[in-house]
Amino acid sequence: MSQDALAKRQFGHRARLALSSAEVSKIDDQAHAGRALWNLLHTWWQMMPKEKRTLTNADAAIRQAREEIDFLAALPAQAAQAVLKTYFRAWKNCWEHRADAPNFKGRFRTVMSVDIPQGRDLHITRVHRRWGMVNIPKVGRVRFRWTKDLPVGKCAGAENRITGARLVKDTLGWHIAFRVQTLQHKPEPHQGPDIGIDMSVTVPLALSDGTTYEHGEWLTQREKAKLLHLEQRAAQRKPGEHTSRRLHHTYDRIAGLRAKAKRRALDWQHRTTTTIARTYGTVVVEALTITNMVTSARGTIEAPGKNVAQKSGLNRSISGEAWGRTVTLLTYKTARLGGILVKVPAPGTSRRCSACGLTMPGSRESQAVFVCKNPDCGWSGNADHNAARNVLHLYWTGLALVPAAGRAVVRRAKRVKPAAARQAGISRPQPGEHFNR
Image (cartoon, rainbow, N blue to C red; front, top):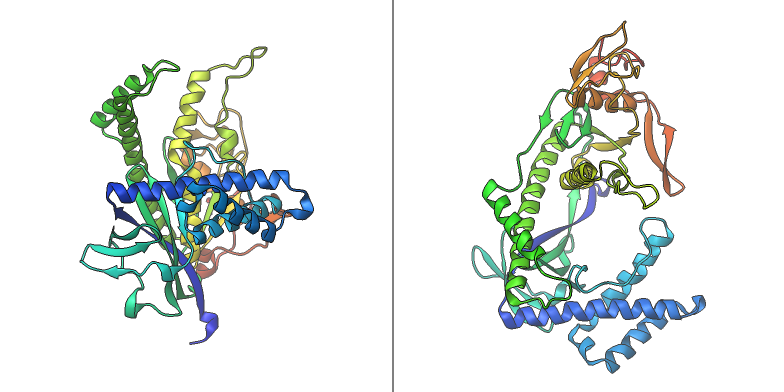
């Protein structure tokens, strides 16, 4: 088989670690040492002149800090080098306008993690149908939950191997995320139809063909009542009051319930996006600026905002739907299956009629009902369905957001007939006739 039909792909596999209290303490010390090393490196970067901010000088500074500061020795040398490379990569992403500038990492708002950059240090073995063993530097051999086959032993090779791992701590404890590199076939172009997707709070995903994907509450009524009770108990703590062990236990239970809701939401998003990526060849979504959508309406003292409580509830609902994560999942899943994801401008899609293409005042009578006020049209239907059809129509007319000069700009893309039209031999609808063929 030709090399053009193959491609290297890296993916991660996360597994839960079974650790004793002593092992948890050792990994915690490594994570805190890594965070402190990042902060020391950031301080060094701010103090040094620009001509001396080099990788060689930073490496020398790290070596000196590990010799002079005792608790930094808890972090393995290779993990310390990984912190250095990650810090320099963060600045490179900032200079290329892909991320903000790196900053200090706080103790309570930073995800605790330790990197194991080399796969040969892991020495993974499978000891049971459900458990495996992995070597963690300066900790020893620990067990992890075996939920997916890994390329170890005879199954490993130059084209399918584990290149490293990362220890990550969340509400459930420490997990290990293996970095697996494998050689896979490049997917054939997906022959499925085009689809437009409208995302909202009431109907999470509404498709242009009339399909909707909805979900219930992430927590049951009993779990929501328990969470409310725990949050009220935690809110009774007075400022400056000593945090007791009982209150720490309350915080842990609150975090556990919130993590349970997040896991259920992520599971629903994975299953839904997988179904969409397998069914459709081109997925068209709106380019939403979510950070601007969830800004507070509080205002200032001179100009106080209106309906602050209602806007706060809407912001929580938008954040709970995690639209950005849905788009991220669709992006890599469609690419893996040979499809494509396209973003189009969002303004006006919910107020424009998908049948006649006109925007008339009062057409959207409610959250769910859209009735076109154009006397020559009068189309009526579900408002979310109408918005999804408009999203798809923007792609069909060639209006798509493409990256240019580091930012997203509007540019007319090359007009290509959708897969369904190519197969049926019909032309793309012109503006104003959308679905009325």
